[in-house]
Length: 233
Image: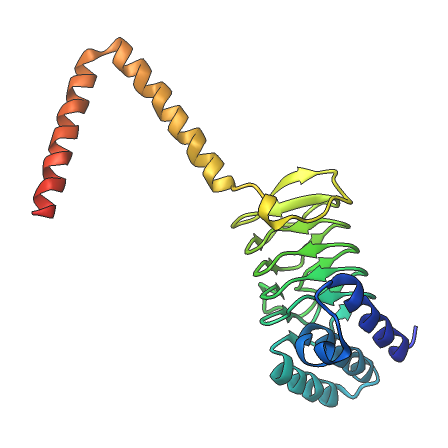
């Protein structure tokens, strides 16, 4: 597929992915993600024609205009949409498949200075939430979803959802469900709930079997309350 055909498809894809796009004037000034992809298409072609310096200069200009940093050597598939786009970074050996949706602040970066494949591979249909970091030579499988602000350092299976720092897979086998940012579980909250319940069970056992421990605990509570009171005074 030629560069012009890819660019035309990128423009059409913006209308498909963003219901807020209502006019061509809107498109011209408010969609840096689309324009960054367009500049990338041209620079990528130049890069592989061995005009590497020209390609890098072109993407440098694109970065100044869009605040999106894409290395011209990266491989980006068809109908990739960068929504809003500010702060997106796509490294040199990154591979992005078709129909991928990337939100603002995403980094597809490396963790090594060694030459070779050091950036992630993002398969078709992946959605990457705002602020997420996908780092290293790992793979995010087809139709996977990455939660906002997650830090992904291990491969993510197809049709799964990963959230957290570092990211953990919390759902598998759900390929076509819409990606609802507000419906992602709070794994830290769930862990704290578990720990609090666990502590309550242990306290109950201690109180039941050893009243002396309870008395010591109450004494510590009084000491703590006195300390807090003295700090406030």
